[in-house]
Image 1 (cartoon, rainbow, N blue to C red):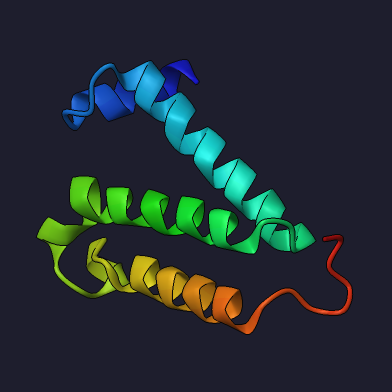
Image 2 (cartoon, rainbow, N blue to C red):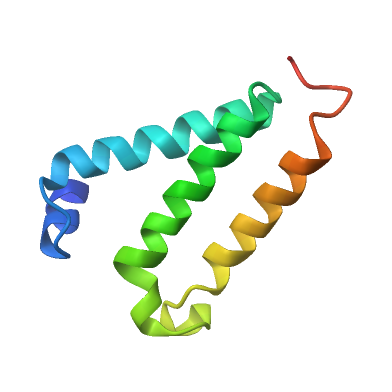
Length: 95
């Protein structure tokens, strides 16, 4: 957490440790809820907001292509997340 917080501070996201904790918690909670099929809309919002934050803080200035650290991968993750959330939880979902 300390090194991630330091990196977040170095790119201007302060306080870095708090931002790292919030981003990590949102990604973990959103991913787990999404995988379990629980509160799918909440899970999708957590994942999408985390990716939008990553785009705004890091990837936007690098352009589109992931090879240049651009937004391509983040946009794909957002599209997949929204698509699966709109499809709804499947038969094997916990909730």
